[in-house]
Image 1 (tube, helix red, strand yellow):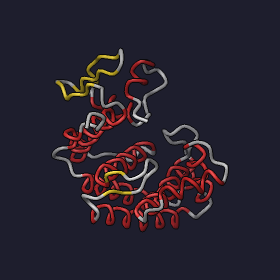
Image 2 (spheres, one colour):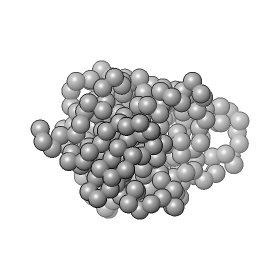
Image 3 (tube, one colour):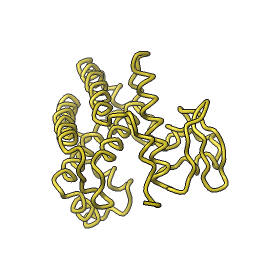
Length: 238
């Protein structure tokens, strides 16, 4: 289809393996942090503006409720319920989820997220090849798994979870590949091609080769305040 995203960018990458790897990193390090009983760790600001580390973990737990609803064919109902509650933006939905989970003791919060996330990952893997209910209606489940993996990776970075040298190369590769796909999902007319030194992006009047780290940050909405506005607009995938 002329308006379809360029799925070839995802060739050779497994979203379920990426999901498992990101979840394992988050689970291991959150449990270590919780065992340390260091309240100041959880209250520290994250890279996500206005959110503490605890807020990010609460958001992850709340998001699992949405994933389960989508897997149950109730994704549209979640949106309807949020609108009925007065939510008018994604920020409202996110804040509502954080507020619902924020006061849970941190060890319990980590446990709740881990159990729910494991179910999400299992059901996504089992449903490969099918569709899932989503905010945009029926959507290829495999693509959704990549989106979920990207979200986990982004929030892991938001709370500064360390990445080992052994993890870094593979993690960078699949995230850059998905970012290319996401740009073509936003604008199928865009030119997005892997190139020496990064990715050649042509969107509207923007035409440049962008390195992988910048590409990933831009698609995830994590470019710094000093970023070129034209670059920010070109890479904004949502």
